[in-house]
Length: 222
Image (cartoon, rainbow, N blue to C red):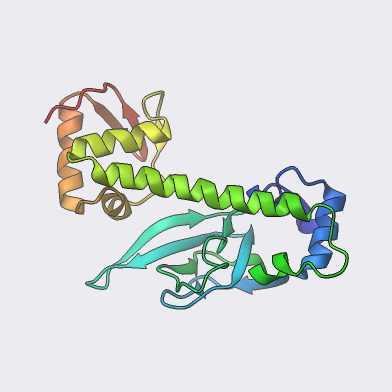
């Protein structure tokens, strides 16, 4: 585990934890290291998950399947990403499927290991639990921002709010979603999104160069 420690320490879960304390925690948690091939399913929608995972190498894609069977990418998980933290402590089935985009190496441990406090526990366990709560809270606020977007009645306003959240009003930014996934995120279809982006470009509000988006003005007219 030593050769992976730098990646583990870079995660939100181990923020503020020293290398020595992290090694003690890892010995106590007994995590499993698993490897996945490109295209292999890590977590299937409709099934419970009781494990918290950290991406040590490679990339994962969190996807949701629409009613007509279309697979929509929801989030990209790269080296150092934490996943499964929200679902692992409940008995709720996963609404998403997580698939390996590339060859991946993951560290996984059951949520229940965090609560097995009998006997001597690592001194850094309270910090790890605090980090877990903070990580879940951060994801809650991401969801809250998404709800704010969906409650905004006009698509142009939703696009502006989303791009502002990425900092596109300060300079070019790369959108971390495909156009289909972005349309899903903004609560519209891809055709409507493409039409609105074209209008915003024509109105001088938006520049698009390849994958880079830049906001040029903050008006919210039609």
